[in-house]
Length: 245
Image (cartoon, rainbow, N blue to C red; front, side):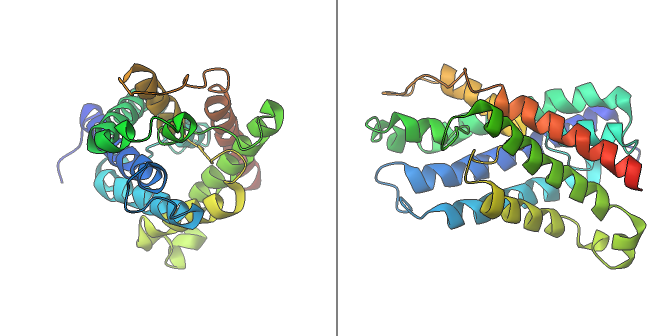
């Protein structure tokens, strides 16, 4: 295989994150918006679909960029010495752009259902980004930090020699898919488990810009939590990984 340039890697990060958000926010729309055939399908469907959404993004980008698809993962891998610092900015920009474009595509796909859901502004916002079940920003920050810590620490552990020899490394996207599903079912119910600024901040910006009838504000007072919480969790995971391994 020819050597892949940083620009090409960023293109695949963009595409992988776009598909991740398209499918992930798509299931939120399917389960939430009025007149959707899947309305009310519930939390288990959402957590399963988000896991598969991550898997699809990884299958697209994995062979070319490593499929971080998440600024918290990129930061954590860089701090752990698993990723070059010169590429961090490019990856994060690509991920954020991919998240925004994925959210715009979700709106275009479900535009008629958004129009039919103007009586549910909170639900429409939840199709784009996360808001807490109980707003207590200190605890919400801790929740996002812990969930992302587990995500990044397990990603780092899956790359160790022991797991690779056990066959986990050869399974590619599947172990991370299981991690996402487990985190959603176990730790996701308090905040909606953003764990990824590109999955939350970029779609939140799309919500603010798009002409959605009946929408509420975009929750900017909370928006720092699903950004700084995951970044902090990723950094702590990298530090513990270096300490332990």
